[in-house]
Length: 114
Length: 111
Image 1 (tube, rainbow over the protein chains, first blue to last red):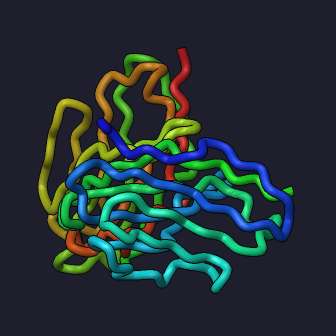
Image 2: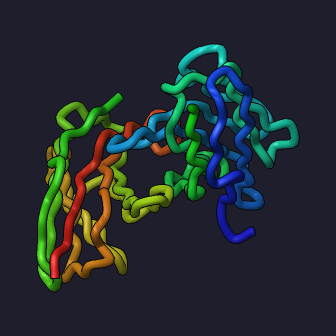
């Protein structure tokens, strides 16, 4: 596609449930990033993939959060046993080889945990 | 990790030039300065990047003094559609994952 695509755009889930958020990066971009953005705050880094491997997962808040990118393209952010504090917009970005800081962001997935 | 300080909000009127200054006192030698723009319900969008002196593109100009401890994003003749949050980021371009967004500057352009 022309840009970074994230699905779903909105997700409402009950506390304790498991959710998966999907990111389709720009074709050919080897670097992929996940961020979390709370209301009124800037994006907060979660995890960075270079190809299929997680090059930096230092931003994941705890072991309930996990992300994969098995074929070096699409990535899935997985959140287990969701909590109300996980409610936020989850943003995905991609860039070519992770060198050019013109990272391209998707529209985000708004996650609401009730 | 070079942190930045920028105003929380700014007001302007259509047609005016807007200058948003960012402080980054502990910028490292390899660090670049990058600005992103974010509209409501959208992801951030790259505006401009520079290392020193002045950089200009079709959207904005970026002024960086010799000591590089601050930078100024200049938006010429703003319109209502420039109302957004502007983030100043400082970091090594080979480590975008280390860039810190902070809370940004909320620019409100009035008619």
